[in-house]
Amino acid sequence: MKKLLILFLALSLTSCEDFLSENVRGIISPNNFYNSDQEAIQAANGLYLGFRTGNLYQGWNGLTTFIFFGSDEMMPSRIFGGLAPIMDYNLTETNYANAYGIWTNLYGVVGDANSVIANVEGNEKLSPAIRNQVLGEAYFLRALAYYHLTSLWGDVPFYLEELSLDEVGTLGRSPADQIRKEMVTDLKTAEGFLPISHSGPNLGRATRWAAKFLRTRYHLWQKDWAGALEASQDIINNSPHRLMPTYEEVFDLDNQFNDEAIFGFDYLKDINGNSQVITDSFNPRLRDEPKVSSQRNTFAALLAERGEEFNGYGLAVPLNDLINKYPKNDLRRPMNLMDTYLGYDLRYTYLKKRTNFDFVESPRGNHGEWWITMRLAQVYLMAAEAAKNDLSIIGKAFDMAKPQVADQIIEHVQSTWGSLDILVNNAGMNIRKPTVAYSPAEYDRIMQVNLRSVFELSQATYPMLKESKGCIVNISSVSALTHISSGSIYGMSKAAITQLTRNLSVEWAPDGIRVNAISPWYISTPLAEPVLNDPEKLKKILARTPMNRVGTAEEVAAAVLFLSLPAASYITGQCLSVDGGFMVNGY
Image 1 (cartoon, rainbow, N blue to C red):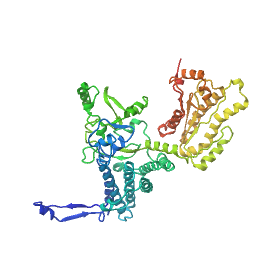
Image 2: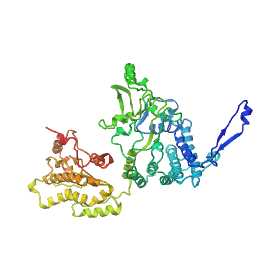
Image 3: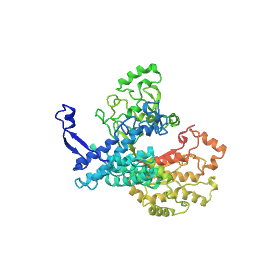
Image 4: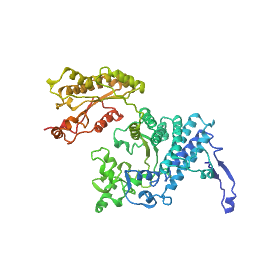
């Protein structure tokens, strides 16, 4: 899409005729632009600006409205103006809210990106580093535009070269699947061009990891689970991005583009065209709050003392279904659901992490908050989805009751993946008998499966875990810490696992290997079924469990996942009880 910027130098405008006859003094076009690195960077900057419009990532009524109100998490607090078709889910060909503006702006990015690619590719007037960066950004931002186009409309017009407006107007719709396949190819190209990080004034520009993030989403759309897993794991393992220690820190207004942020759009208040109004959609408005309207003046005065105002639109609020189902004890809840403020009950519940009440630094209609669109936590979720669906994930069973089986497992791991990041020693068995009734063969079998296999696998995987700075999570038991009616050999084997965990955590800490253990109480698994299916035994178990229920395998898996993540990078040698409060329950 070729564009001309015509510059007029008008010495006097004494009449309409004088204006119409004024000489054109200079023309900037693709043919005489792109002569320097600076001009190429300016062209790339124009692509970013294409997304920073009211219809896309700047306005409260832009692309984010479709994204939020199209989810199962957010709803409008009221039907409002031209966005009514979105809010009441009544979009039609003639009642389309701001869909036309979104369509136009996204295709503006596509056309401009096509022009940048055509004029930068092979341009010897540019340094190789700048040429690669600009090309990578153009490929990435074009793919981002087509991501939204196919997300909202499915089959859409598709073109990758410079076309005139007349030529664009004749294009029919191409299948969304075809477009997405092309964009995966483009994003792989972008990854080869883009740097791994930016700093200073370039912070927030696209990196290799942003391109991989977007490619992961495309792969998930195509149900290319292996492709999604490859791209997401590369980000997790090799990018400089890290999960923040707490959920609250992810949304810290004083550190918005933090280690977890991969890509987003930065805004500055008081700069014409460079502030955003998305925050207004999430900020409450005083006319709605607090819940008791007679308290409004007192509440407003209290806000003013803090340099705050409820000066937003109060429009985007969480769905009641989300509010009702959000666990009360979830540590993320206060950052997601705000139904009280400064001790006052609110009429609506708000998405706290998207708000900013500072009317000096973040005034209405003039917000400077970043709008982060890609975070590392999302990568973990995408990797989990891909792993869950990937039929190419290789599973192989080994009989841990057999000695030296560790050698077979290591051979399999090395031939299949070549490396190892996490070892979870989860094999276990039990035979419940009085101590005097056990045979030597039963003793050997329980100890082989429960303890010796843990020792041998830990020993055998040490070189790979040292190389990857990996971790081990051993599955122990509360029977390692106190007596339960599970048999003396079982308790002895689990106690040994707990102590082995402590020993290895100290011995291997200099090698960067973390070693932790989990001690479950009764968990609903086949191993525990003989006990849990006995009403009397189950009654006794629940009587000793403060949470008054049996645990699930998913809850144990969540603890394993936590100890395996970077969020637990300073935790080693610990034995985490997953027991519903059993171990701290006194008389």
